[in-house]
Length: 331
Ligand code: AHR
Image (tube, rainbow, N blue to C red):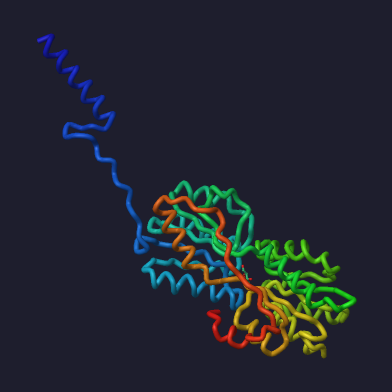
């Protein structure tokens, strides 16, 4: 009896040890094969900034159209240019059991650490698009977007060329929404290079990416003085607003006052063909294919570079084949 009790205990201990090393009575425990995700398995919560102009409309369309083409379920959230609403929308997607990917076009660079940690704890993949943020990069999979500082540096270089024969180099800067990476970095990049030819930024104010505010701010400045040689619009819309204000003040945009913008949307090409806008520095809005590809890789456990900068050009009203370039543009 004593012998069989010891045998039984020994068998029990053996079974316990075997199950601890993952071997059951019917052989080793199968390690579950990780799920391989496909685009049809992706449910993306997309936090867009809110409407801002031609660039933003092209960016939104890129996400909606590409999701349809790839069979991705897209939940679109319009943050109405309100940071508190955008953070609330982020939490909504964290709580949404179906959402496995969150894409963020951040209105401002700060205020994201907490929700990013919550998303990580909830196992959500987070991809930043268009706008970078000031958060530890282990809190998101990757950032796909432009080098805004380089766009600012290019803008300074181009205005230096435009003002090469001008004794005075007073520049007015129309700034994007305060707190956004696009506005901060373009301004910083511009200031890094403006000294090369003696540019002075004599006026600088936000016009919130809008054509109306771009016009109003420039009108107010023109009431004070007309001592300006060039205008740096941090996006096409604000520069187009400034062009209207210059015309109404009896000045010839592109001649009396040079005008440069960033984005290279259709509106900028139309204005360059009309001879009003001199230069536009490209900022590519068609980011969805890269973002979805990166998100799928991240879902399948692939680690990604923390930043995938967009490839972008510069276009000038003096480009001999401007018309054909314009005809070939997608946005
Ligand atoms: O973040 C990119 C900027 O946002 C674009 O330059 C501007 O047009 C948009 O509103």
